[in-house]
Structure formats: C-alpha cells, structure tokens
Image (cartoon, rainbow, N blue to C red):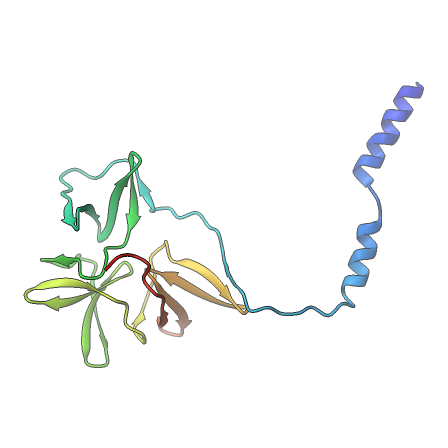
Length: 181
C-alpha cells in the first residue's frame, strides 16, 4: 500500500509539475519585445512536388545535359529514383507553351505565364524569362511557399516574391538566381 501511495504521488507530481510556468506567463506580459525584421518560411507539405512514375508517352527535353520531363505544364527531373518538381532555367526554349498558359502584359512586353514560369516569344519559340516585376497573376500554384516578412504574408515561387493584391498576386521582387546561367 505504501508503494501504491508513493507511485500515485509521483504520478500526480509528474503530471501537475511545478507552477513556475504560471509566474512566467504573468511577468511576460510586462516585458517589452524587440521586433526583428525576419523572414520566416512556413513549412507545409506540397502535394505535387514529386512523382514516382511519369505519365505514359512523357518525353524528356534535354537542356544543358539535364533531362526535363514536362507533365501538365510543370517540369520534373529524375533524382534518386523519383521525379522532383523543378523550374526550367532562364533561356530554356520550347516550341509550344503549355496549354494552361495565359497572356500577361507588363508595360509593353507580352509574356505567357503557366504554373510559375514566364515565357517570351523568341525566334518562333518560347524562352523561359525572368519573372517581370509588376506582373499580376490571378492564382499561384500549390507549391508557392508562404513567407512571413514583418508580419505581412508574401509568397515565393521560382525566385519571385508575390504580394497579394485585390485581383491576384503581384510580383514585387525577383531574387537572385543561384543556378548557373
């Protein structure tokens, strides 16, 4: 019986714990917090970032010794036995833009936009272009990454930072491209 009481006492002590946390909550409200400018990325699972198998009749497009597999307007590369979503590099050319592409005009320049990639017509083909600052798109793909910049939610996709506006998402900044040209 003594052991049972001791076990119950330890059990109660373990789950109840100490009350120091309550004191810390009361005094914390009186402290002044220093706000730091920090960009925080929200980790969220992306549904369409990898594929185990490609759809039938998918043919690779080889660019600078890398095989890109187009699937529904998005591009995948083979890595470690699976296909990983990627964005084609600037200068990558196609004969035809994806069927989901829409035309966006920024200033006097026309772009075709599909799933986070901007295309420009060049010599009868379409070349992947840098995202133009000021372009407004109606929707972002699922794999756009949310970032928190000083309490304002922005989105990052394909080296571009998007800000939500009333009629869609506007590109406000283009990050430096770490990939080779």
